[in-house]
Image (tube, each protein chain N blue to C red):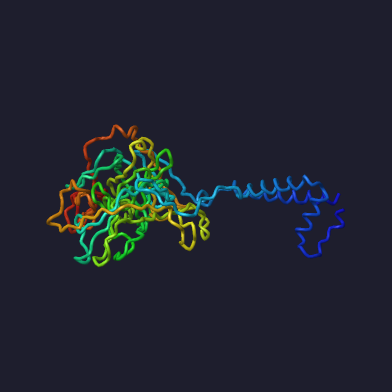
Length: 189
Length: 254
């Protein structure tokens, strides 16, 4: 009887350990628990994050960018989105912009050109929105399944709102072969 | 009898208790206990496959996975002149390595400055590259994007007093996706918190030497064209942003 009791105790301890392990494995990771709060919208509509609003006015894709006399090619395609952005109640800037594809790969805006509109270089005042364009390099196969992500913090987007706007490009292979320009940001009334 | 099992003598409590338990039950129970222990060990990761910590040396052209990136070293060389780069000392020379870097992580990533470490080269002005630039347009290496591999020139300045290497061994840095012991989040970090990780792999390549004076330099067909090399230090970074002191056009403002 003693032997059975001891074996039973041992099995009970093992079962408790296995249960604890299962619970620990099943609970979400901190990355998941602290993920940004998505604010979802469509092209052409205003989407309000905690500190800013954003609207994708147009989106297009091209094989190359023409910036002044420079032509920047890519092994994929360039996604160029025209944005209208503004601060909500206090001065702020957008410091993170990226496109996420259907495979959950995240492509940040290019740093081959300077894009102050979404890299923290432009402080927006409430009531004074800006319009301008941003450019993102993505593989051609990803161009048809992109969602634009915008946030106000470049390093840490956790536990804060992030706009998610589905980009209306149906097919990356139908992008323009001609280089396209990127509009400067400008204040609009 | 179980009561005969001593728990006070020499040999340790657990050993005597275990032996007593097993012997009292049945000889065959030892195997059952062993199987159960193995199973429990597996439940907690004891049977997981563990990577060989020794860095493998591979041939040029072989992809080396390093966690969030995969590096394929193609060739190495030494030159007196490389694009528009300027040596700190006239007598120095450039060591370069051409490699393709593919981001295998799910987010755009800026490779660290010590992604490639040269072994067997002496007299380097600094251990990290003086420049790293995309081959296709000479722009400086910055963010690389997932599944968009780039062929990159990594360039070190070597003292003219140091011997010209005939071959280079290039070790490739790696990162591990693991839980941060401070913040508890999962991210790409050094596997070892001291930063003493072994490299992901090593590649040994012969060095192509082209040390002829610039005026007598061979035609581009003799090797990689100098114009294909990095010119990042001289290349402007186009800007689409307005600069108060410059034209508001979308052209480069440098």
